[in-house]
Amino acid sequence: KLELPTHIENIFSRKSQFQRLSTVRNSSDEGKAASNPEADLHTSLPFGPIDYSRGWAWQQVLLLKRKERRFRVDVYDDRDNILFLEHKPVYTLGRGADENNLTFLKEEKNNEARKRLSRTCRGPGSSRLAIDAHLSEQFKSLPMQNIVDKLAGMAHPIIAPNGAPIYRIERGGEVTYHGPGQLVVYPMFDLRRQPFRKDLHWYLRTVEEVVIEILRVYDIEGVRDSINTGVWFDKKKIAAVGVSSSSWITTHGFALNVSPNLEFFDTAYIFPCGIEGRGVTTIHEILRNRGEINLPTVVDIAHIAADKIETVFGVKTSSPKLIT
Image (spheres, one colour):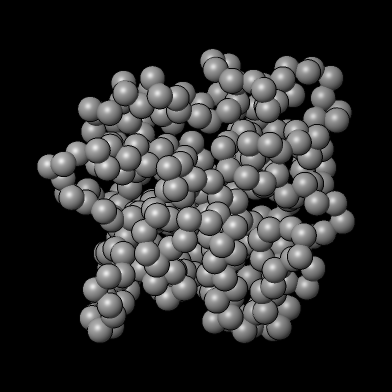
C-alpha cells in the first residue's frame, strides 16, 4: 500500500475526493451504453507538483505497455489512460518549435544552449526527451515504476535564467510553460476505437471543447482562435493544447491555468506558444476581477475535468490510481 507523506495527508483528502468523485460518476453512468470505452485515471496531485520529466516518462511507459498488449493473444486489456498532473516550473518546445521563441536566448552568448535545443539535436547531451526502439526493448520487462525512474533520469535540460528547465518534446506546437497552479491533463486514447475518430484535428478540437466546458462551470466564456490552438478568454490564453500520437494512441493534452505564477510567461523568457502581443490569464485572475473570493483549487478543477472528459469524449473512467 502506498502511504501518503505526513505533510500532505491533509491536502489529500485530495485522494478521497477523487475516489468519491469516481464513485458518483460511475454510479450515474450505469445507464450508459456498455460500448463506452473505459479509461484508467492516474494522478500525482496528492504529492504536489512533479518534475516534467516524470510526467513525460509516465506517458511513455503507459504507451509502451499499451502497444505491447496489442500483440499478446493471452491478454485482453483495451483500457485507455488519462493522467492528471501538476508540474514543477518547466518550459517545453514542440517538435518543430522555433527556439527563438525562448527570448532569453537572443542574449545568450554561448551557442551551446541553442544547439542542444535545436530541432536536429538528438542523443546524449541533447535536451530532447525521446525514447527509441532500442530503449523500448531494453525496458520492456521492467516494472513500470523502474522504467519511469530510468527515463526521467536520462533528461539533460537547458536551464532558463529563472531556474526552469527546458526540454524539446514530441508534441505539436511552440514553446509553453507548465508549473504549480496549472492543471495538466494527458488523455491517452486509442483513436482507432469508437467513439473516437482517426483524426488528430478532430481530437485536438475535442480537447479544446473539454476545456471550454470546464470554464463554463465558472461562467467563463472560453473560445477558440481561428489561427492558434488552445482556449482563450478576452484575447488572452487560458489553456494551452498540444497533442501527439503513436499508432493512433494519443499523448500530451492540455494545460489549464488555474492559479500559476504569470511571471514565468514574461516575454523576457518566452513568447508563449510563439505568439507575440497576446497575453496569458488564469481562472483566479478572472474570478478575482469579478470580486469573487471563493476560488477553486487545482484539485477542484481536476474533478470537473474528469467529468467533462467523460461527457465530451463519451468514456467511462475508473477510480484514480496514484503515481509518483
